[in-house]
Image 1 (cartoon, one colour):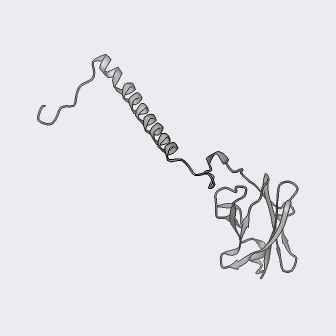
Image 2 (cartoon, rainbow, N blue to C red):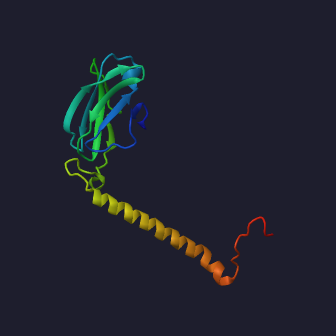
Image 3 (cartoon, helix red, strand yellow):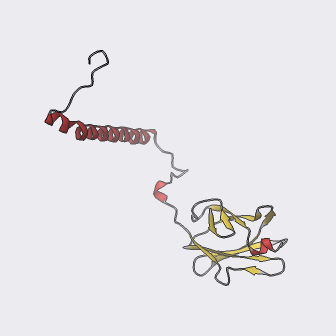
Length: 157
């Protein structure tokens, strides 16, 4: 995913407490810097500030980052000569999404087989009910109006 020109992530969404790979092909890469570090933090106050040296590849500088908690992921880049790419003094700031805990199964808590069967059974019943409603809505008006004709095979024309 390209969030801004010359910055790419390997995911569509930035989610708290997940790992993300960032690729940078901006000004410092284009000026042939040998070493680039990403300077980053989280939230409006840049909490948990850290610097990571990025790996230089043919596709740009790359690094894997463990995203922390906060509303935003803030970062800028610095090379070996203390030249900065900080988005013209604005820094690069992107929103972080919260983890949806209700969808996660905890590893410590095994899921009972009976609860899986109940979920499957309720899913199958909901499919049957939806199919029955569809058939009633589709065919009941035809039966009431008398426009319902059974399809006959090719032998009875």
